[in-house]
Image (cartoon, rainbow, N blue to C red; front, side, top):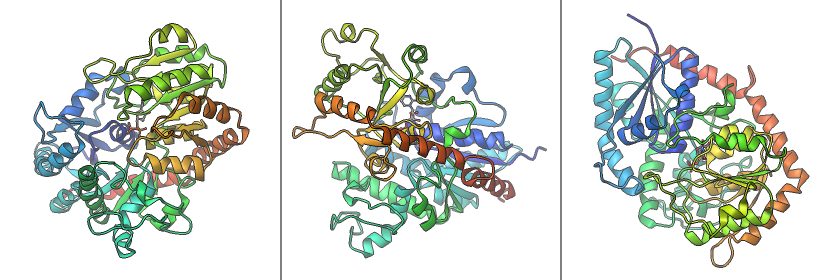
Length: 461
Ligand code: UDP
């Protein structure tokens, strides 16, 4: 009989959720916990087909799968379809999985760490009498908004269905930044059906789960969101996650990383390269794609650009005629970069980003200033943090035809790279967040206390 403390970790099935929860799991394992990591079958295939040697799980990390409720041919990029199917089928499947693990395993599951976006797990945990913690892959501010839904309804900012009743700026506390309610995730998606599904399934269910959970751990730092953590003390920053790991290698990628860009970066002057990457979901129309291509060329600066291929392996966009010849060695285009290593590289001068929260944390903890180009969901909030609160970046703005023009790109790149204050702010922010991770400081203490709390748990009946 072994006496491993066994934690079940379950992410939302998307890249920006799997990577940070894999990182959380690795820190659990480093602290002697055993982890069962639950991916949907579809995501498991993607992750394991992009495994590199160091990713392969060890004895303490068990990778298992459950169905997401969709058939093999269903469109998993359809968030409405996927979310509804998951919330319907996965609770039963998770319960069966836990019962199977407990029957066949020496170490019962004593704690579940669930993604905030998988709020349905709360009910499973309560029914099975297992302790629950939530993990937030987004900013604590986004979860604070979810936890404030009853107050927003009372204040008549939204109605009970989440519809916006007024669009004045909202402040949850005087120590938190003003929030633009038109940027609430369930308001800003453009499609009313999608907005409703996000409100009902992710935010209302997520809020319910925050009540069931004993702890909420966040990929953030006290220095980054002090006001939010003060107002919502149940939320505990343990990040920025990847900076806690001495090895900079992330795991859980859906695409194979192209490491040739690191060799290319080695050949570029220090502090010269524009790193251009928009995460795993952002899409552009062809006109915008070409404008971006030309804008990068017009900067006359070296750039490393991630242009994701579709899952079938082809590039969905067409580069302007003769583009590769025009850029010569000035630009490097890859399908998927080892982003954390890229951002650490001394040749990188700035990060043109969609402001996904992971990218925001990764750029922030490496002292890299941002060119912000948010695409959807919480990315508009994150842009506000970067440009208005931390002042570590500038925003790329669209023209009347909804295009970020090549002129805007060149002018903002020049503006950013000639701005000593923004670079200095980015370096100061880096110093502060890294300090949170030092032994005995906020993020380190929160993680250790969290692990102690997990270790206290007894096996459920
Ligand atoms: N990422 C990467 N290589 C790339 C682009 C992105 O490794 O070429 C990683 C990035 O480091 C981050 C994650 O993918 O950890 C994307 O998460 P984020 O929250 O930034 O954006 P999302 O994909 O969720 O929109």
